[in-house]
Every structure is written in structure tokens, then in C-alpha cells.
Length: 176
Image (tube, rainbow, N blue to C red; front, side, top):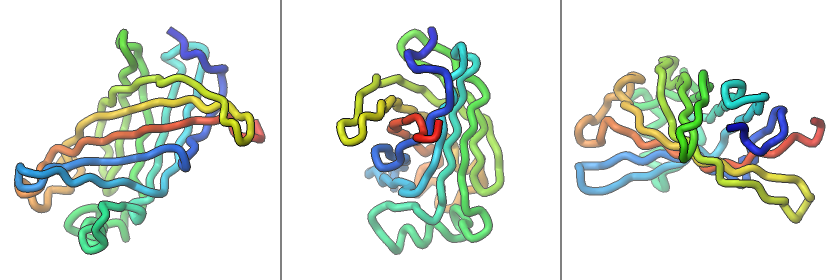
């Protein structure tokens, strides 16, 4: 199935998108966070096999709602953001699953690249009344092992499994 979107490159509308994560602390509560500064693109080809997604987040923009925790996360125990200021995902394949899409790709954290799989859903399109542009909505999610990326501090106090979630709107750049 081809997505009902014209071929071409679309940029993420970060104002209307969110890149988040969730871990369990002490096996009793969830700690959620976001990356508040990120970019991304969606390239639609003539088939699903020719479709690609890429996302890059600034690690310094992590926001868990607690500045002391955020400072610790940015340090060497976790992200080492001074030496690894970005996290990135680039899809290597997109396939239809019947009720959505499976995105396989390379996720890079702390300079370590690992193959991951995300579940994706096309949420539809809508015209943004402020400027008349068409926005295309997607959700993507998956679970990674943070220790696979050299982020093993505090396991098992903080779970090794991290849930990733992206709620994204993509738009055609004005120059396109």
C-alpha cells in the first residue's frame, strides 16, 4: 500500500510533534521525559519500500520535569551529552503490517549504533487553518535496551528497557 501522500520530502513540524521516552523506577513508577529540540524528515517514494524516516534530537534538550535529574541524565552516567550531543534514527526499511507499518533502522546514542524496530501508524492528514498547509500525522513507538547503547547506570533501579514514542506531524517545506 502506498501512503496517500504525494512523493517528496516532508519536514517534521516540531511545534506540533513530541519525541518522548518512559522508564520504570524501582519497578513501581513511571518516569517520562521528552526531547524538546529535534528535527526530522519523511521521504515518500513510489512505494513503501522507497519511504524513509530520519529523526535527530539534541540531547541537551532532555526534559523530565526535574532539573537535577535532567542534569544527571546529561552527564557521563547516562548520555554524556558533552561528547555526544545528538541522538539519531534513520530508517533502513518500512513495510506494511496490515494495521500499520514496521520501521527498521539505525538508532545512534552515545556514538553507538544499533538496529531497532518501531511500530508506525499513519493517523491521517488535515489542513492547518493558519496557513493552509497540509499536515500528515504519524505515531511511532518501540522499546530499546539502554545498556545496548552504553547507558547502563542504575540498572535495575531504573529499568534497562526504555519505551520510545514519537507523535509527529510532517509538512512539505515552503520551498518545495
